[in-house]
Image (cartoon, helix red, strand yellow):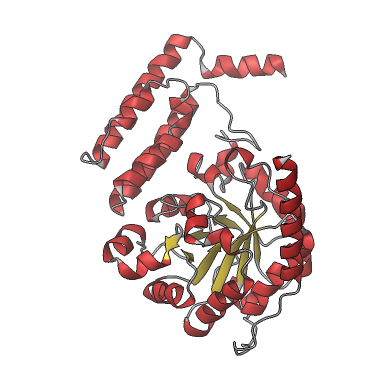
Length: 388
């Protein structure tokens, strides 16, 4: 009874919200500004088509530089909390670093106060190509803090934040959103963002509720419909980009200007490069466990060393580096789960050279495991040929 009651109450509230959102009109107390020059801004970014998504504690400088080496042509910073960014020198120093080669770059903030988001953005406007408003975070902390996707029912506030940034900043304003489960509302939402003055939009083709075990596939069709309605607006499609072949599939399906990937890049930062096709560490829709081969060992450890070199060069936060290593080494650790504890034992009081030594140990033990399995790379290829 209670579940049925909740269902009808939820549906009624959803219909009320739908009518409210579809009836939105911009506040009259905000002066109308000229539309951005969309094409000029997109061209100034280098017409990017392969984009590193904003990832909390993961799209930091060192990892951005690694992704750029392998074909990423635009990166977002991790989501930065605007209030903390304004009030804490330590927070700024820990969570925002950049360098000369780290361009083009969009810096993403979350927040629910126009003046606070603006104050935070003022710190970085001279070190980036644009400031992005996070309207997509679906996590509980965003619900508690009333930011990210939990602003989706408050278009007046979103409009105010974006117009304030647009009026006061020297760089363009962009946004990253999630979709509604209603095409008309999603299109109206984007129309509001366009009226507010965004210069570029990234669309995660999942709703706010699609997270964790309920993630499911992103909806490329709704992204395509948005792009059809706003052909002048540079739009990036986010969701379902797990391997190199997905890039072209998504571009064809959505007609967007670029594709954005997040978690898949943490397992294979070469995803945007054709070299990832030689030994795809991921395949479409599936995080597969690859057979242990010498090539797999060489590729995984080589990428790990590359990242550690960049992390050392750019003085990355140790906790962020260690978290990256578990994903970069995933395919070797999946064959010998006991080695996870070896990596886990490298504590913060230790250093990146200790992580490098740990990678060497994992490589050595993986080679031994391969030798003991009696399956050489050539034997594996022969077996695959027989199956095919």
